[in-house]
Image 1 (cartoon, rainbow, N blue to C red):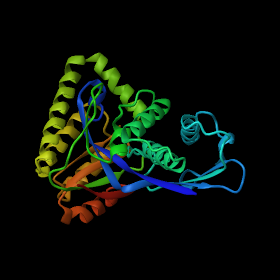
Image 2: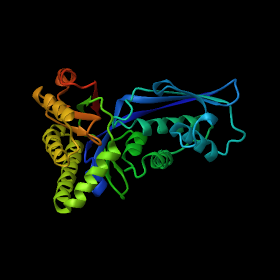
Image 3: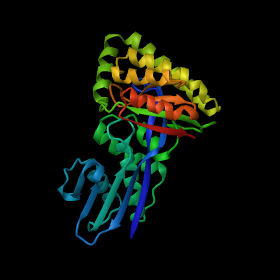
Image 4: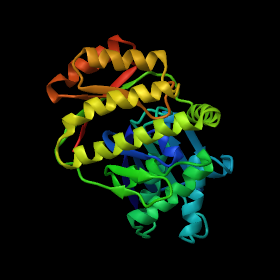
Length: 309
């Protein structure tokens, strides 16, 4: 018996950081990168996990109690009331770069939960999967926004306001985004903490910035739904300058953003926590390859060209 499942990556298009303060954010799935999980019956006793991408080859009981992958497997076995423990091989492969703002952690949880629920004949709805992954995200990130788990579970664009039901929405016309990775791990907790200190010092200034970003996210959603994605370019440029004001950009990110614009991107900005991780550029499909090359020349460690459809 075997079962398998996949889950895509994600990027934040607009609203990072401001979303923490009740503003809106917009995120989309990145299907060009994904996590694949396979669960198989095993001839040997125990639950063996193989995740070569993170050099993990271990039996479940040897992992610490708070291990991200181990805790998901245990949670599912308890939820499905499986006893005694089955003998399994769990194979996890991923093309999503780790710690780069592309949602690799949430994608592993989504694919793992779906593969296990299928293996044990306990089908789960998208809503149930999403709730479970959010619980796991809380274990590892303290106070996650809920964006990653929702975009990845539903594999649809998401419009998000903290504390309100998350809305998925449709894309009126496909558009192309190039993602450039600085290769620098993005320390989200640190940058979120620094923005908080700045906000505490000058709440009026920062709340004006957050409101402006909220407006950008709202206009962006309307542009995407009405099939006018070309309007996103100026919105990206504006959002990036506001993120610079919030001190969460970096020399490396600014350099990549400028390189994309110089090569003819309609707009570009950092994506995610900032100070490392990724930037994104809106491009004509015909220019995607040349923008990706320009990003590599400007120092990007790798690029992903993705179609948001």
